[in-house]
Image (cartoon, rainbow, N blue to C red; front, side, top):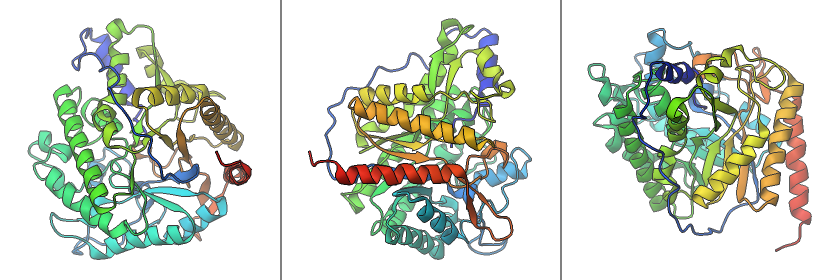
Length: 446
């Protein structure tokens, strides 16, 4: 999901230690481009986003040929992350997710495929899992919901972890690119009869920052700027590979980026703009390398923040109406700023692929959604080419290092029946979608 906020501690330490020259250099200027104005898009996409690890339960037991481990499972075994358990049982209970989606009335649903489940060992594929993912896409399509398939959402098969040399792990493992290309081709071929939108990677920029600078996610390196650069380049190359394979299998399919793009402002006590430059690199280093093979620039927005040590270190102490339960600053206007900036930087259609709030206050959730959707409409009235909006998330779920504490869901799960119980925000979102569809039907043809 998002750039992990515990990154703040490490970035602030860099300031306090007196670093003055940024190891990555200045942020590149906006890339030159002559973007095509592509056609063939559906009406505005009103969606919901989820991910495999955060939702799916296991269907295999240790010793089964199809049993799989992810790098995140290795982290949990070391006691460095909360236990995942069965999450929301979405592998077994996908029909319960589908029923909730139909009740809300979304037009699009973004979910991810677990690479490790599909390929539990190098070259050994779980055919039942491949068919199950294809069936999910078919069921969504038959329900009138466009599947948006994310091919990678933060986690790698454990066999891409080199326990003896962590610098050759995940993106940088010698097998990664070859196996990735085979996996992508296999999954796109299996799902392409039902899928028109593919996102090769979810927030690679956030994952790489958290893995190589903050030291929280595998391979857990701290201030490894060399590794950060190498992983950014490798992930961008693999993204481009995936885009090429998607177009080869289904030329009409749309390739969507999904980057973490909080809005950053210059903060005090940031000599030379070290922190600001670091987070801006994290925002755009990856996207600058792949935007030209994207049909849609998708990005996730949750909060704005001052890029300074005081603001970053105080995050966990921030509470009240203007903050989420994780201490993130609620700033709808900054979403508008980011839409304008991204639209100008890349000159391509955009989607907000994640937006949501961790809160137990349903009035706050309603206000958050209402005000952020209003910003999207405002920028569209100004001429920004926004094609869709996706809420994170369908139901309260596992949130990486935060475990099950943050409540992002439009629904909760009944622990006895495992049914998704809709919250007031789900019915609000339903009304937004219904009213939007009515407006589209009565709008004159341009």
